[in-house]
Length: 413
Image 1: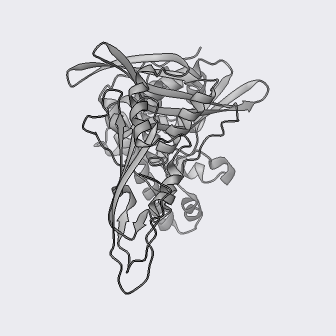
Image 2: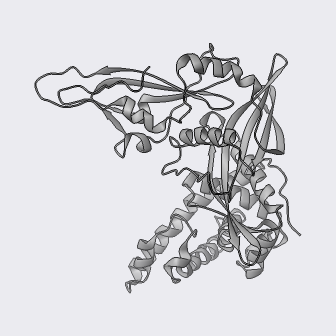
């Protein structure tokens, strides 16, 4: 369908359609153009349909975004039913104009897309293979590979742009990386699929990392974006992918520490799980040491062995200590609760500039409330902050108990 066509017309009190319900995605493998689609929905549409995320003037809108599973070439089709015009005057949203916001420069019409789908047999992953793993799913053994791209060429940058256009629908507030900045490098997760003796590589997700200079000759690496397509989520791939990224970064001698830029809640829990699982293998993070409180030696061990920043090490300590605390022992749980609350007070007694990256679910309203003189109000705010942390920590503790297999952590030194 021609996206340049003008769909604006007069309507009466336009009906509206929720954008995330109107849009659906499908990944099309090289042998699956004629197959039944496995559709999945976006999470956000504000980057395309603005903050209200609605399409005005229609009774029905069905937007289908087709992606070639390997190289993520894009084709968009849609159908709609406008609200019939009558007395009052109004306008329908121009769907074509909105959708151009999410179209990469190399998007294809239907015929060219069909040809591109069949051409995917020739697609090869970019970068260097750094890790592979297998899993048993529905009685079938599947293979997955992770590649590291440090010197992107034009073909990869076009592929990355298509990936990021997809991620716009799933990561709120996502910003595209500056492809002219050589400090960015990328990790890509693929499924290696063998069918009828032929192999193709299905794109599953990506991770972008930015390297900051650290005087005199070091690097501080920051994870900027981490995305996995919904059909591959909740199968353990996120944790394996993140562990592989962290292992690769830890093996670089110049990298001093690894941080994350403004993590969303889902990624925060994933990071907590992977870091906690890794720290549970360190001597100072064993249960007999955790109940003695967090120490500078713990922070130093996490930094030296795993390149985990001190504030994240403290968060991991609280998660692991919760895991070995008897919740039914009043004195034991009270000791844990007071330890966490003392740290909350400590956080909000420092300067605001030092709060970056600390306890993401706390805010300056907590700080302002904690400095009030009213003792009851201070207790209430502290308790609410503590309970929010428990809501974050408990799912991580539960997941740790499942003994989920990850790629072995690489410890430094």
